[in-house]
Image (cartoon, rainbow, N blue to C red):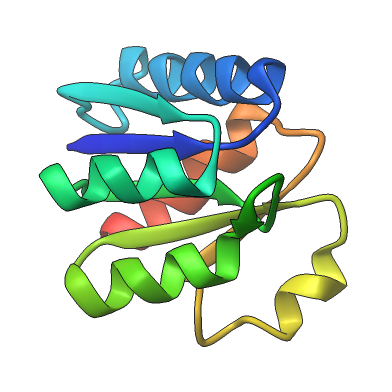
Length: 121
């Protein structure tokens, strides 16, 4: 599985990457690569070059919206899974059709593992 983490906060991207690596060591998921993007524009550039199986994106990015990014992904790569990161889970309710799942900030590796396993079944 190839994963892309999109968030304008470096700390969040690093925590997400570490959580994915922890999930992989528990043999729950197999990841061949993890990439990061710090903006909407950078994510779009990466997505135009290659497909990712899993994209985890913040809903509010400094230069765009994670909802627009998710729509782009679902149109170009409908089989890709997109998880929203948000501090406001009720915000996710508005976008249930856009994202496959959501993770509430602050992030826990257990919740991430659970959501990814559910999506990949």
